[in-house]
Amino acid sequence: MIYPITDRLLPTINNAEFKRYAMRYLDIERQTQQAITQYGLSFEPAFSQQSEINQLKQDIKALGACFANNGKSIHSHWLSSACVQCRTGEGSYTTFLSLKCHRDCYFCFNPNQENYQGFQHEMRDAVGEVAAIAEQEYPLTHIALTGGEPLLFRQESIAFFAAVQQKLPQVHSRLYTAGDPLDRSTAVALANAGLKEIRFSIKIDDAEERIEKVLHRIELAREIFPTVMVEMPVIPGTEPQMYKLLMRLDDIGIDGINLLEFCFPLTNSDAYQSRGFQLKNPPYEVYYNYWYAGGLAVSQSELACLRVVKFALEQQLSLGVHYCSLENKHTGQVYQSNAFFRQHAQLIGQHYLFSSRDYFYKSAKVFGDDRPQVARLLKQAGISYHEELLHGFLQFNPESILYLTSLVDLPIALTSHIIEPDEQGNPLIKEVKVELTTPTQFLLADLHEGSCNE
Image 1: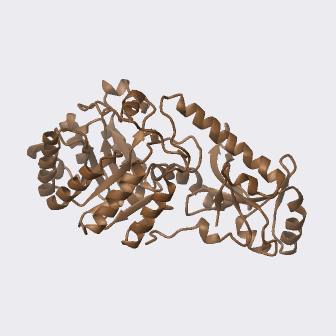
Image 2 (image 1 turned 30 degrees about the vertical axis):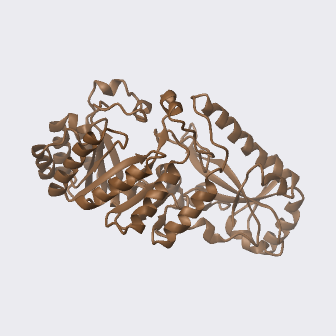
């Protein structure tokens, strides 16, 4: 077992130096949350939904759902190969033509994108990007066109997929759309250009007539494209509408739906406050500067997503139902930062272990008066360790914890690390989290995971 450090857990750590070290991280978390509230939305009480979330996950697992990517991705039945690839970001590329859109969703995070205003008017050379990827012979397996709304630029969208088909014929291609601009001639042209998967976004709080129009376009797409999906955020309190929608989508025969955790994009807080929303707490499993522009998860959206997955399983619906959490969006960045060094371990040293569960590097530390006895046992076993005098800890590879089982209740800090380039481009190992374990409770399997845990 590995335990996150919380205000409640901290007093139970029987080592003053370890406590002081861990307290720095609690201070960072508090400061981060205080800074986030300046954007206009408050946090729910910490872990206030956790018991219900845990129960729903148990129920869903018992019904046969697949838990992947350290439980951050949960699905039943079919799942797009692009979603599997997204977990690590390997061989995957997403681009856009423009960030212009005919919709005005209060939860849209596109304003967080770099040069958002510029791409309201300028066009990105997405076709040129395809040519560059082909020329560089990059090992691409999946490519996507998103927006904005790509189908506001129909000919350019068709040209993009035609370029993919010509230059990258083995690559799986997909398109994201609100669906409004899609007609039969456009759909046929996109299919002829090689588009393999189309994903529709539905606004569950739209008028029923508008949702019905999008559903008609989904029916059209089902006639034409190999793979048809819906991808949408699940807004807390909309579960009854989501159940009805899933039944309709299952009747249409789409392949699957991605249920996204509903997020606050750090803008437009009045719209969220007026609806009574708060932020999920804690906002991150690991506090870090993530690239994903979607913002922060809203309280109770995860509960709503899990209820919808459970409904689909209980009703034995045929379509694939995938809960894609906000945390699931972050793992590709962590993997891309760290995976290179799995083949170049000499660059970071032998006191770190790559975790296939969350893609962070892990290290183990003991503090203060616990150091001499640990050093003695590791030395007897011929295990390397590093002693750091400033913070008073002894550091070693987590695999070596198994040599310490005679120290039954020894508090061990299990630390998480991500590798960033320094100013010269050399690897800089950045510690981003500390957790608690003991020699008798630690399992190496806690750091590693198979592809699907049912």
